[in-house]
Amino acid sequence: LDIPHVYTQISALNESVIVVDSLLVISLDKYMGSDYSLYNRYYYDYQTRSMRPDRIAPDCIAFYLISYYPVPPTSRRTLMEIMIHYGRLYYITQQLLGYSSSEDIMGYSDEEKKWCKDNKKKVWEYLKSSKQLHATDPMVIRRYTRPFPYIAFFGENSPGWIGTWMGIEIVSSYMKNNKKTSIQDLLLMTDYDLLLE
Image (tube, rainbow, N blue to C red):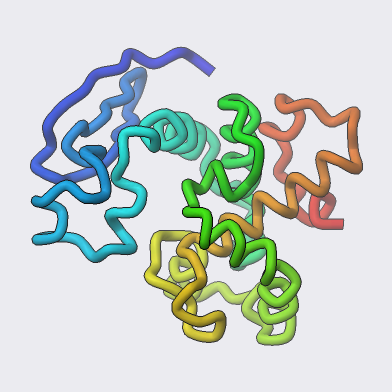
């Protein structure tokens, strides 16, 4: 990967991070802090949770990786494959920045971290039993891999990005059991079935 030229801008609350060619642009007005007064006029609480200065570095690295490593063209684009794809890139971001857990790299609050630890098995069993793991509907995929207030089945205390978090958990488990796999190997991996097994 080439190291991009980094610029900052005021984007009128548009995109948080823009990656194009050899440029990475950070919109500083999207990282003013969750309690920034202007945010409550345009965003819901669940959206402002990640609009903090400490999210700049993880967002920049994750978005940069996502722009350089899109979903493979051979993908069936199921929820499972998208979860693992994003999980892989966020896991790498976690390792590069030294975050101690998947919950930390997602920027979850203490309450959300506890919820994840208490409900990990429930999330996985629901995704399997409801057959949503094989869903290709973009709305279903977006609900699990993007900011969302909560997933109705899991209750109002469930955090957003729950599918991406679960993807990080899957990749983390794979890496613990495959010590010879390097970050570079993981970055180039496109056989998600192998990773899941």
